[in-house]
Length: 374
Image (cartoon, rainbow, N blue to C red; front, side):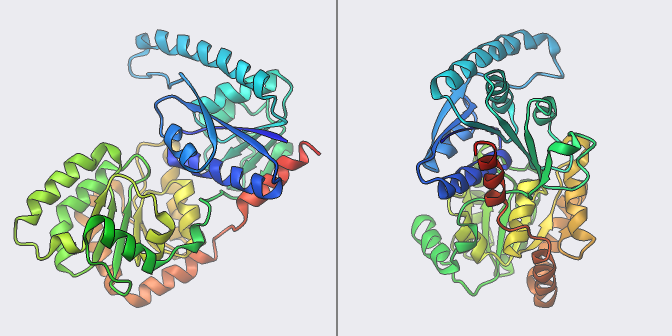
């Protein structure tokens, strides 16, 4: 069977897509899988790293603040639809799977026009624009939250949870220490309290600025810090760390890893005592599955404030702590330090967040995909 998978723009779309591909390949050893992404976006790197072929479309989002600049966007949209129709014609997929993002809109539309069954996967409790536009083209829509009938036809909805990255639960704290010690020249040990900071695949300005502001407090507290800044913020953060390392902070280079992107997330998670994260749907699914004590900083720059809704679902169950984006510069590092020092609170958060996990989401979605061709 041939499967066309499309979506991307952020890790929140890419990692579920790759997880679904892995589950399909596990269920169908001879599966042929082709991804369709947007040129210049991170899926064009991440998908080949995961071992899959990808074709890029020249599609991009609309400029809402300067609408007169959208003429070229519309031209690229027309080109992308034409290319997507050619990809569908040449590849001849048995099923098309859309996970959200610009490219997914063009690819799923082309597949539907060709009579190919379409399945959508929606990660958030507030459906994305692309998936809402495609709801009439889809045969099935796999969702992560209940009560999604306000966005999609009720008879198409299947509650499956969010897929997470492959092998996420197979990380090793010892392997993480070996990796970071060899590649970053630090002196990490598995039994030292460790803070993992992940602002999302593109980074998070408020989280990064909050960590910079309190970095000397963290490092003087004797904890290990793994800090994924995101590509856009890496240069600034790394430069300020270099300046800090010449000040009074003790042994800064031995307990701090600063990197634009983490390719060893399973091991990094395994080493982490506490995780600071945005509250995107995929991130929360991973934290639940792994049972991590977490401090969530919802992004204020998302549709209908859905990250705050995501975070509050955990906070109400005593399964995570929440620091508002507006309060982060003052509160984030002190909150992290208190949690790192409080083993009882860490254990309680770990126990409670585990009860919210939805394992085997990718496998359940793959089963629904296979039903469309059998």
